[in-house]
Each structure stands twice: as C-alpha cells, then as structure tokens.
Length: 309
Image 1 (cartoon, rainbow, N blue to C red):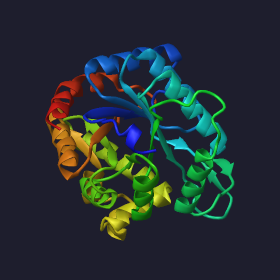
Image 2 (cartoon, rainbow, N blue to C red; image 1 turned 90 degrees about the horizontal axis):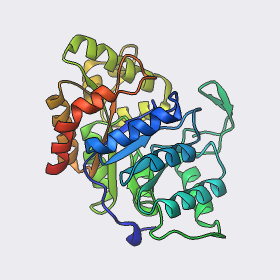
Image 3 (cartoon, one colour; image 1 turned 90 degrees about the vertical axis):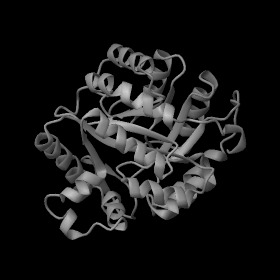
C-alpha cells in the first residue's frame, strides 16, 4: 500500500465531531460549503453516532472533489473484514477521495468502558494495530479491487506507532498534538510518509474566555485518555502541567486561540515543522453545533496558508 497511493493531500482541512448530531440534510449542505470555501479535506471522528463508513459516504456524495477522511475509524468497533470491504467500496465509488484513518483506545488486557460502554480489550496498542492491518490485508477481494487503493493513515502519537504508520500505511494522523510533536513525528516517519495533524483552535479575541474553553478541552483529554497524557509527558510536560487544571504552557501548546491571523500562524508552524496537511478543529461553547461561521471566517486566512504550504 505505498507507491500507487502516493498522491498528495496538502493545504488545510477541517476536523469535527459535530456532524453526528446533525440531520443528514445539514451535513450534506455543510460539506458542500466547506468544499466551496477552499478547504482541502473533511476529517471526522467516530464515537457512537453515525458509523464511520456511512458518514464518509454521506460526505463524499455531497461533494465533488474534496478529500474525506476518517479521523479515526475505531478498530474496537468492527472486524477487520468489515473495515477492508467497506474501504474498498468507498475507494471504488470515489477514486482517490477517501482516506481511512485507523486508531483505537484498547491498550491493555482488561475489560474497561469507553464513554460508559463496556469494551473488551485486545492487547497492547502497536501489536493490536499490526495484527489488525495484517488481517485487513489478508481479506480477499471478491468484488472490484479499486485502483488506486484507498489510502490509510494511523492515529499515531508514540515512536513505535509512528514507525508502524511509516511501514504499513500512507502515514500518520496525530490528534491533540503540539508543533514540537509534529517535528518529532516527521523525524520518525522520514521524509516520504504523509503527516496530517489535527490542530484545535478557538476563534475568539476575548482571550480570557477563549483560554477557559481551551483549558477545558485539554483537561478532558489528559484527564480521561491515558495515551494522550503519556504523549504530553513524552513532550516534557509533568505533573505540574497535568494534575488538576492544566497549565497555561500545556494549553497554549495544544490549542491555538485568538484571531484568524493567530490561528494561521500556528498552522504555518506545523507546516514548517514538517506537516504535509493540517486539519483545524474549531472549538466552541456548544460542541454539538457545527462551527460554520468560524469555518467561513477562517477560510480566507487558511486557504492563503494552503497556497504557501
């Protein structure tokens, strides 16, 4: 899964969880507008809303040429056979437009709960992902085998998962990361693998209000996601930054907030650090609302940044 899929996805995309609560008609309308605004990709998360492949089909059908990417499809939710066959279907129907992002959070040998839902564990993260990819690649194609094959990326944070992303995928899609992480990821991935990073942003010139929202976002991840806490510790953040209310140093490293030019500068820093693509996740006071006004306001600055990337 390498040479024949080495097409370029540059520029700036959007990343959101907010499609799930919306009716399909609004999702289609918003996706079409996003493409018209000049963004290069639409990335979406997967929780307990729409199935990731159904969501991708909805977005792909609503647009003409923009890339649609799962960020990520959770390997805990489906068998590798289902993932492989659904990916091929989208790859055949929308050649070159779908990226399969894979990840998951089951990293030990105990049963635990994901958002309150009991999920049996599969094993250590890298070994589990490697086995999942092995199983996907072994699924025979009884229908059309799309060419080029759909690209896939891994939700990679640590060195071993980044190495696996370079070895077995098109590249990596790190989420909840700093510019320093982007530079480290590029070093580990090497010069050829794709690196598409998520950047959380808040478009608000009231910096006190924006910082409060940014702090809540960071606290939610480091307080509930062990892999995210481990990653920020690898970047040099300690107990003083993580325990209780996250430090401003950590918050400012993860979230860009302020006016459009401030956000544009952070995106540029990721490109300068080695990213091929940056997808911005606009945070607002209502996480269930589509941030369409912010996407519109940011587009001129970020599309210009795309041209410079």
